[in-house]
Amino acid sequence: MSAVETIGLTKDYEVGSFLKKPHRALDHLDLEVEQGEIFGLIGPNGAGKTTTLKLLMGLVFPTEGDARILGKPVDDRRMKAEIGYLPEQPYFYDYLTGRELLNYFGQLFGLSAVERRTRTKELLAKVGITSAADVPLRKYSKGMTQRLGVAQALLNRPKIVFFDEPMSGLDPVGRREMTLLVRELQGSGVTVFFCSHILPDVEQLCDRVAILDKGKLVAVGRMSEILDVSIDTIEVVAENVEAELEGKLRPLCRALERVGTRVRLSCAGQADFDAAAAELMQGGGRLLSVTPVKQTLEGLFVRKVGEKAQS
Amino acid sequence: MSRVGYIALNTYRETVRDKVLYNLVLFALLMIASSYILGQISVYQEVKIIKDLGLAAISIFGMAIAIFVGIGLVSKEIDKRTLYSLLPKPITRVQFLLGKYCGLCLTVLVNVLVMTAGLYFLLFLMSEPFEPALLKAIFLIYVKLMVLVGVALLFSTFTSSTLAGVFAGFVYVVGYFSSDLKNFDSVVETGALPQITKVLYYLLPNFKNFDIKAPIVAGDIVPMTQIVWATAYGLLYVSLLLVASAWVFQRRNLK
Image 1 (tube, rainbow over the protein chains, first blue to last red):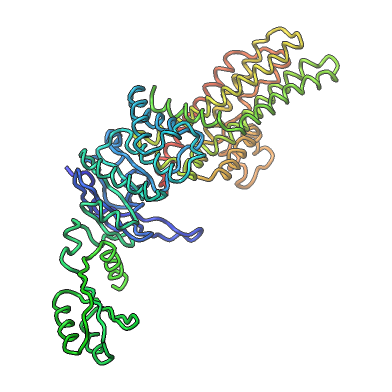
Image 2: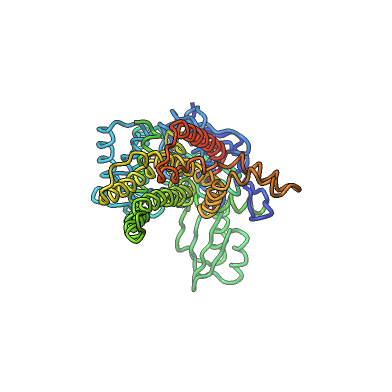
């Protein structure tokens, strides 16, 4: 059984004040997330990431298609008792204290009074806001609210957690702690589904990612599958490159840039590099450094979204 | 306790921690207290004035609390996005609505009880004997307020707080002239207007059914059957309003 499954999930919104026009926020999304994996959903603003999460959380209803979590429909109450959710830029009842909020949500999860007390204490310590436990939420900073949001998502010891921009509002220490927490969750068998703009975090954490753009799935797969593990680019720095030699090198590289007396070349793969190096030697140029560069998620993301825009 | 109960208690806690509510209650108690001064300047009418103004204060300020808090019951949760972290919990949308409704009814009840205590305290200061008949009028005021909370909740499920306030206010005012709507065809006989007023008469609650303040203050006997029927009418209306609210809210996309 998949942790999360969407089949042709589509959402149209009506936009405009008077003459309402339909806008497709999500277009036939087919996705399958396995249990125990860390799955990242990335995409530019307006790609449909938050809409996907809202559909999974039952906050909006699909125009077409279906979604299931742990094999159950998204409005199943027993299933909801097994998931945790951190919305994007969470906002909680500001008249409650952090402790009261966790106690209230614990009541909704059906936890006993003893369990609520224990979990609240544990989680407040885990996210580092024990000292603010009895402070009203209206006095919380953005980072503290985010930390409390993480705590409430873990209250019921969920099997799956959905994080929408979990690093948002966190300082570098908070982001590091969040990374460790996600790893810890995976270690205890929890499936983590998260949307993020911060691509290095996604790359560092996720087993698999899906890239969305304008509501459509552009790419999905294991990091090792979608990111070419072989060398993506070879960066070369050389000097003594005259104008004639520069003209010969230009067709052999992706980019050529002159920096003072030196030139920087980006070669696409080994064959181009070999040809450029040979030309450089013959033309009297001097090789100063060679740096192989692997493909990053950010590079892939920019390329995929760019390809789609061109098509 | 059920999940509806927890949501109700949290709604109650929200209103209790809101300073606006205290201002309203304080103002209501001041109004009840001021009836004492008015009573002093009206010869042989002191007690009647205190009862009149006291019951009116309970009704008006109860209405203010029911509408002003009720219109934000759902729309405020959507505007502030507090609902986004609540609805993914193991609750249904209907449980959420029922919890919000019961929570505000509890708030209104506590306020009505505080104002009732204020009224009886004033009568006690006037050396008046305890008069249980007033409780009949106050009870029906409370039933009316339960209906009004339902009206505010219904509007709150599909529109903004401001518009919900305007609509709920309209229903409250028109609901007081319900019998005039029924007999409108005797004034205007042609056109669509009599038909429209007829539909409004059947659609909107008749708040006059809950108003027994005048006979109670005058010392007339209000039969128990009238109170039972008015209560049954109110509860039926509340049920219909809750069903309509649930129907609307279960279809609403929380963008």
